View 1 (cartoon, rainbow, N blue to C red):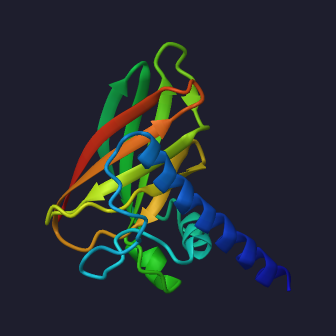
View 2 (cartoon, rainbow, N blue to C red; view 1 turned 90 degrees about the vertical axis):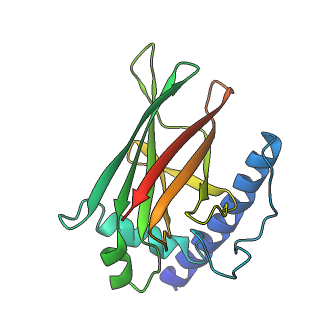
Length: 181
């Protein structure tokens, strides 16, 4: 019973987060291509029907020796430095029956104080190698960064646009890319 209640709560929480991410990008003036979680090809590109299980699976293997982490670089916008990484979590996720292949994460730091920023609303849009853009994906605050498990299906260059509304209420946008080989 406890497990069922936890899963129901997690599902409700995840549903509300995806709606918040869409609203965040819409308010910030970005072109929102609808709240659908599937692209024109009918495939799910980075969205979770069961984020609770995906997040638990990632936590269970978050720093597994087999996980490869790639530094996507740092970018400073209006006094806040964003440092992004992506990890290959394919094996850990497959072990629990999940399709997600990577964990995208970004850490924010106030450049003046050097303090880590761990609160706010953060989402990412992903443009795949074919030039198709995903709906916004809400990044959850965890262990000093904001992150989400995503699906990268095709080899090639992916572009990540991160939108943030941090506690100072300034909206910032960060751009990163990743060559998936």
